[in-house]
Length: 278
Image (cartoon, rainbow, N blue to C red):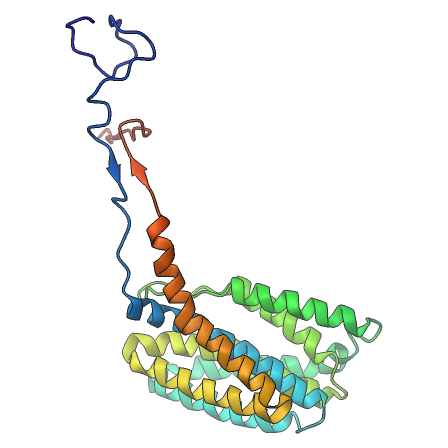
């Protein structure tokens, strides 16, 4: 073999065969340099965002079931949610900036009141099986496209999930018997699935423990509603689902890190350094 030192340069004519591999070729090999070590408690904290929004979606669907089964009037949960939303807006926003959210809220309510008769008859000619299948798809898409941002300095952008949520709510409301029930249900659902996640995002910037207080309150509310509407069996399934999200999924995520095998070596594509010409 030639005594000329091998160089990793294709444009040089070297006295080595094309398939030659030098012993120094893997000197720069690095494995899992970008893999971070995750804390279990930190992952549980992150997964609370998923659980919180899932609870809100579940609350809307169970409330619809109760109204559809005529267990209670649609106006009762709407009054409660409106009071809670107003209170949270007052706590979250300074006094001089509260006018804009309330004006936006009143505008949405007026539009919903005007279009409620139209929305009520939107899916009258559609079979119930098709409606339930569409609701399942829209609910999954709403949860999948939601902005679970962990960076509190970033801008909260939830346009796609909000559009999916509106479509889901309209399909649900179209199965209710009266226009006022449609209006009340839509107001309740928009407050729960749109306003409360936005308020929670702003509250986490100021007082992070407020997120956990809200999570516990929503968890207890949904548990009571599920027990009241569907009974003890569904309550057990609900508790098992929350346990899966908050306990099992973080453990499974950490378990998967064992099989992460990322290599960085000298064969990776070189990134050119571009210098601006002044």
